[in-house]
Structures are given as C-alpha cells and as structure tokens.
Image (cartoon, rainbow, N blue to C red; front, side, top):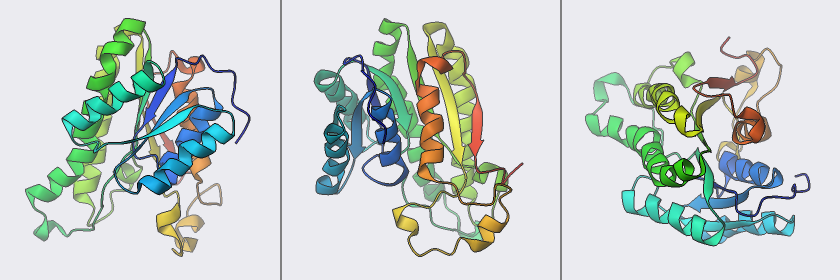
Length: 250
C-alpha cells in the first residue's frame, strides 16, 4: 500500500463487509487515497480489527464497526458512529455479501430470492439513506455498489443471485438521476471472479483460459477502480456500470 495522501481529516468512507477479502483491500486503497475509513464487519471482531490497525500503522485513519448491513438500526448506527469518530461520511461502498448457494430453479423459493435481495438491494438502500443527509448538506458524495459480472454470464443455478445483482443496475441508474442534483455520484463496479481467502485451493485454470488478459483478476484491480470513483477526479462520472474482469464478458 502506498503512503497515504495528506487527507482532509474530516473526509470519511464507509465500506461494508470490509474485514477481509475484497472489502479489506478496498478499505486499504481508500485509506491510501487519504480517506478515513470505517471498516464494517458482522462477525470475527479480532480479525476485523486487523484491517484498521494496519491502516493506522501505515499512517492512515480507520476504525472497525460491527453492524448487520441488512438491519435498518444497525446501518444508521454505523454511519452515525463513523461520523462521530472520523468525520462526515462522503463515500459509501456497498460491498457486503452473504452466502451464495447454487439452487436449481425447481427448488427455488421466495426466501431464496429474499436472501440475495437483502444484501444487494435492501442493504445498499439502507446505506444510502443513512449517508444521504450529510452528502446533501455537503453538496457532494460518492456511492459505489459492488456488483458482479454474473449478470452478463447468466450461469445456471444462480438465478436468485443474478437477479439481485441485476437489480443493482436499476438502483444505480435511478439513483444517479435522483441524486446528481445534490452533487452525489452513483456507480456500479462489476468484478469477475476475483479469488480471495475463501477461494483458497480453487482450480482457476479453466476460467483463466477464457480471460483475454490471460490472468485472474486481483482485489487490487477492483479496489483501484473503486478508489477512482470515490475520488475528486470522478466527479462527473455517474450512473455507470463498469466491469472488471479482463474482458471475460465482452
């Protein structure tokens, strides 16, 4: 991680599901870019604390906050605590995810759909609602949803997950028009398969062979784009869905 820029100490980013995996790398990227970062987790406090501890060791500002991102009170408390501890929240990154079981269509239930919608539609909605009053007051803000290129791949036994991720496209398009007049941008980052800790030991050869760039994506590939979209240079970029998969779904 590069040396953090001289931050405006009051500028804060909230990254959900950032105690490990892709979220942790996004948190570190934003810290390196000068943001104070609220690292969110729901379980494993000890390991979650390692992310902000590492950011602080590198000269940045970060704290860990436990919150169930599908719960209204928890999300509003998360944003309020981050603002009290770190400063006004100008960036929210909806990255948290839950289990993604493969389910055949004949076995699919409405609860299976709701399980995915809670994380990928309800949770981002709660996060934006909690952060929006401050963003409107400041006249600026960045909303980044972490989606998936599965919307383009449309694999079998993944219809509930794919449908919920596809719904994020609608959220981003509508919210970008609604919030643009307040100086708030809204964008969707759609990674391909980016191996993280939970994929340890997975055979990536077949997938990698289909990627025009000839390699698997890394968390840093995704975090770099999130960092750009959160920054001042992306102030006129909104309503976009940007895929990070090395051209796998051209």
